[in-house]
Image 1: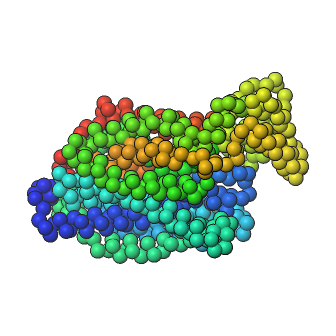
Image 2: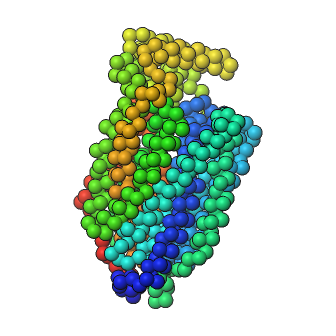
Image 3: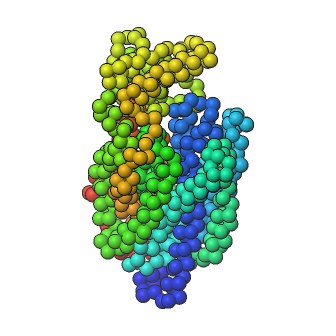
Length: 558
């Protein structure tokens, strides 16, 4: 059987072949991750370009939600391409995915803005994001399985960890291209050029990457394990029914989802995406500084995936993954507090010395979320909270008498808010501006900074915090591909593996920035959004500890 051959000592030719398989799979995955991450890193610019018809908070949340939409369609792509991979072959499935992914990314760089095309602009953007998510749903499973089915059993963790590294390389490339474009345009024609049209360059850059990806994937042969199953005539004719309609296999799918992928989605996307949202929106750190910090963090993360994949070949998959998710569970809240102290100490000092309170009738307050632009947020409470949310200032809520106008108390000073309901739009806008000016003036007088001061930043401390998050993320993510491949039988592996992976990363992880920011905007505490990833990570720690079996050394030809 194929597994017996894989367990044998590989020849020099087989080692060279494995290196080619790993390089082609990881490189193709890198390019696809680049495409997806460019959008996530440009959320702020996208919100201004395609959602300029909404207010600032709603526009930003809508852009984050659109980022999440791409992830939401990943499970559908996992089912479609999983069936293709289990019925036709691994190679064909992810040749299609890379083509769809690259084409949709290039198209985003050519889309008209809201100012040019109105509501058609965000609709077209939504369609492209759906195609991106759909394609990526079939990418990871194909690459991970393809490498694992070529690798010797005692090196699956190390070999498949290169596929995980592709995510780091893709994110690093995205940040590098964005930073380079922003810097060069800033020097040549001014910083405003990037927000106006320069943001399109990183998307259009994907055209070249797409050509390279297709070329490398065309050189690959089919997986030997899949070919053995095909020759035996045991390919599943009904992968969906076999994977999800039979309890022994469905139990494995649910176990992979809850015990591992819940944490993977929460931990990884908090580290590499929500942390950026937190620094930019709440700590008011300059985007160039964030990009620089994240580039260093991502560069450091790349070899850590391979390290923890290699350790999982020695110590077991479960022990390494569980250590990563447990570390992040402990680090969530203290880590983000230290991050705030390191990057914007003036904000931390102001919040400690001069806390902000919104005193309002609870019936006067709405959820600060409007992705479709229908709500006006013109009550006195809504106006006050909207100003504070946009300023990234934490506040506590205090109930006022029914019908009383909202007040914003900054230390000992009190700023009254105004009600603009039922007034003409221009009048309501002027009232909002007036309230915003008074609240911001009160915040400034109490020491709240409008932006983080680069001179007071402790970047080494911020890097140390991000390094802890990164170690947790890579310890969890490094062995996952090997674990998932070993968990499922060959005949349904592509389908059964891909669905829990993309539900965890897509529905749990992809919505971390959107959900966490929406929670903060509603509750008023800039750290409250962390309860979302914390809850999912806790669920995985408990279930992984007691229910997950060790898969190290399992044969794949079953």
